[in-house]
Length: 402
Image 1: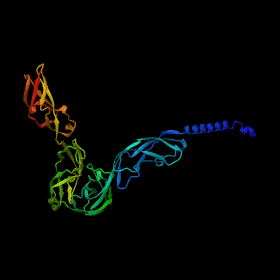
Image 2: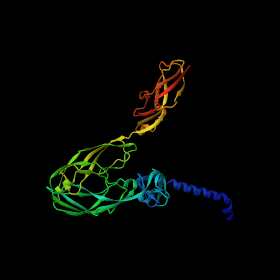
Image 3: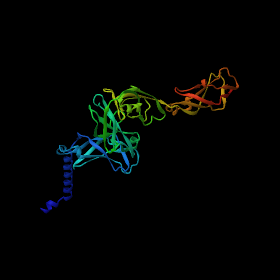
Image 4: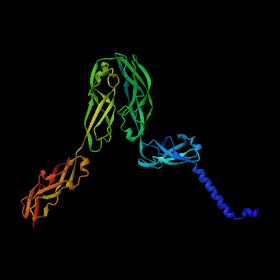
């Protein structure tokens, strides 16, 4: 019996190993490989203090391999999708999304997208005032008087690029025919020019107590509308025109409040990196003691136009000899270089080269010898959008030989 067991023992171990491997392969091949039906939220880890990460991809989809019995028990909570920011400072990075499973015997075989662009910025903090955004109307013949907030300022914090563009936080006061003064707690929001909440910025505290006086409406007054902007246009551009439709609006309030007001402001419009015409419907912000006429539109249409700021550039012109008699050639030019200062928009001048600025010399009727030619602006050929400011010298000597 012993000989039966030990005979060809090595071969038997090999056979056992192969059989075990085959069993593992068969068991693994029984796993289902498919796309997980839900999305996995992405979070960042190991971010240095006083920094904040901004990224647009908030969820990823995954493909995984798992036993059919496990598939039935899975949910999005069984996975972690994260971007590791360990050791990274402020800047922009393309980073890999890692996904891990919280349960055993699950293999993540594909992540989509597997790379995410992340911008890391320092955290900015600043104190800003609270602005009232009133919707609805008080009872007929009445309007809002003084509006007091407690506290009247809050601290906001978030990415520097966003915080720098924020001047106020908004407290929406909803009126529904109130006939008496009231006090209530309202949440605070940071709104963009569309009246939408800006995310990624925290407010402390997150609410305020507002005391609203309801008073008898005084006379009407027509005031202008002041369009507020934040940020700066694209490099080389400036705001050339702002049109607000309507340009004025009728307001009501107590005489003392009406005497102090000359215009109503819009919510700030972000013009960062803009160069094309911008058209938006923007909400109005009303100062304390002022209301719009009943059924008046709470928004105005604003159109902001941008124009390029012209710049100048010095360039050596290319000299082109025209209409030279047969058998002649230009042996020398004195001076050999014509310097030209041109003007135009930066997107046109930045790529401009000498071959784009051509000085045409008309040699009609010229014979052997040295010929002096006076240079005028009309002799230059320039690309569209480019003009000549000045050039030196004002004349050139051409030496013609056979």
